[in-house]
Image (cartoon, rainbow, N blue to C red; front, side):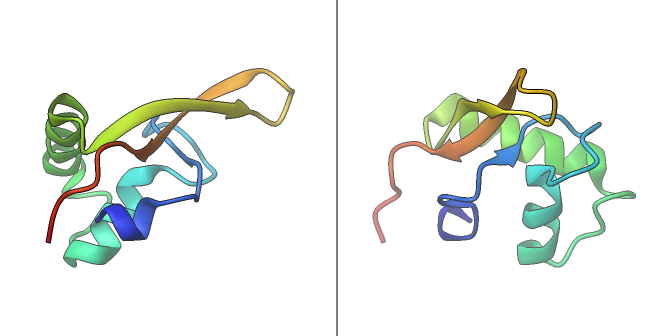
Length: 77
């Protein structure tokens, strides 16, 4: 999952119309981003809590900062 998310600046908010991180999670894990939304959000929160993912920021469409999800501490293989 970290490789799929790394460097893409995907958005934390599931209300985002441009690049919610949960869409990538759904694609990698073969889930549906709409029907499995609650499950995906729980996974993201777990990864954030463990440090595998961290929140970041980038400029949004109106130059206001938006919260993104970035790779935190890389999981060992």
